[in-house]
Length: 321
Image (cartoon, rainbow, N blue to C red; front, side, top):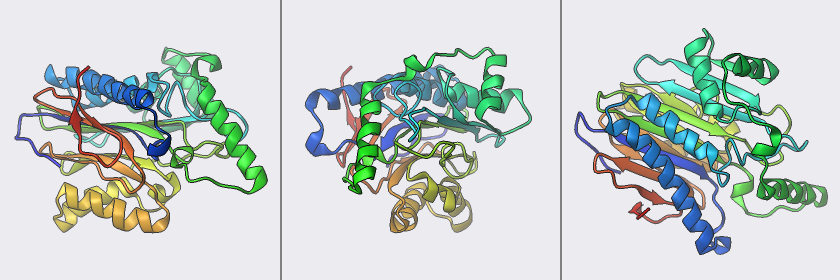
């Protein structure tokens, strides 16, 4: 955890908790994940370093993660049990609590832009399914055919998960259960924002919606406290309003960001089968990145421009491009 002074900025990102088990992670694949995280950090940093708003920074960072097939959002999203991709996304602005979200869509190249369009172009917060798709087309968002989003690894994961279900077996690979991307930021003007995007859970039921587009569960931003993006077992995040709970503990119980975020992840979510983690930034630019599972793809960049990333329990490390 670190803090920064007023007038400085912080961007934190995640590429999902429930990472590939360390025992099966190759050096080449690990390097690719770090490179993807760095590209997202660089995209958001460019916005913040130019004095841009936190909302633009988190949008840019999440777009970069959606474009990277290694992560479960946008291109590379997982499949439902019916062999379809259904994506969810949300954005929230801490200055005025403006928020937008989409659920159950496949078509927009960057679902986070669909969520932002809902926030900026409608009086609503959440649009779903075919009506959300019609809205995206009307807004002129870049659309892609299903082939664009396909990756062999995600398709193979679906087949193996379905096979395990048929035989009643189960492995300990958390990366099957959940994967999400997200970003939270504090800009030089002191404003906070959060953005989250996901393909959901491998072999989820068609129509299932997790915590990502549920404001207060997987996505939250409030200039008075913090911005939060979650990744993990979405149903549990929803039941305990995980993201907003962190904010409430700060506002009402006087907890620090680190105290609140860690307590929610370790003491609220974990005992209730809520495997996962959060990234959070507070109103002063401090950050917290707790998780209760094998690992969480994550990164932070601040005023010095150093792109610090990590996957497992190791500390964040500045890495060369």
